Image (cartoon, rainbow, N blue to C red; front, side, top):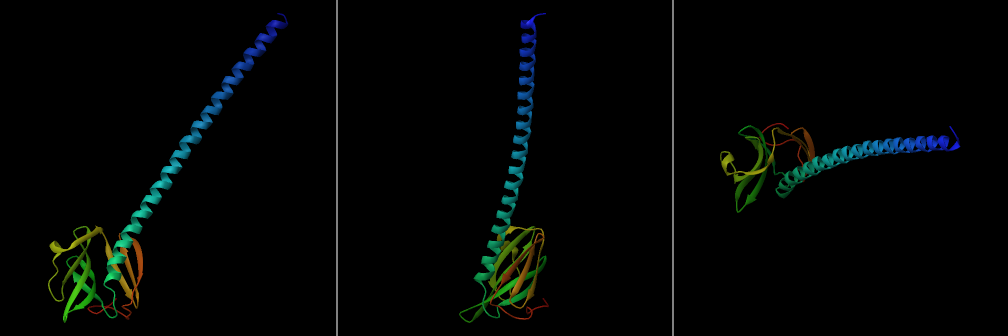
Length: 165
């Protein structure tokens, strides 16, 4: 075997090494790409959940702040538990904006004070399996499906009429 045979073997080994090295780089590149896509998907899902929670919180907060006035906050008894009630005085009449859970949804109802709750006439705000709240002076803490929402209101009082906070 002469110098040309050794050179051919060396070039063959070099080609084989180059192909194997390119294969390893390709595999590492694909693993990185798959990991990057998985990471991006996890981040996008997290942002989507956060945006949904912010939307839900904003909708409920807007309803509460729209009816907020001094001494307007009450606790009522809805069909499936406590209701957050904000009282509004219009032309000598007392009306209530009621927020409560009914049939897997958080609903808002506007009615003359003292009238029975009518979920079929209420507006659905959002889907909610769980709804509760506490009132501490001007702070209302809502718990909607395990997510807390703190709202500061002008309806500052030590408790809500119609029951303890």
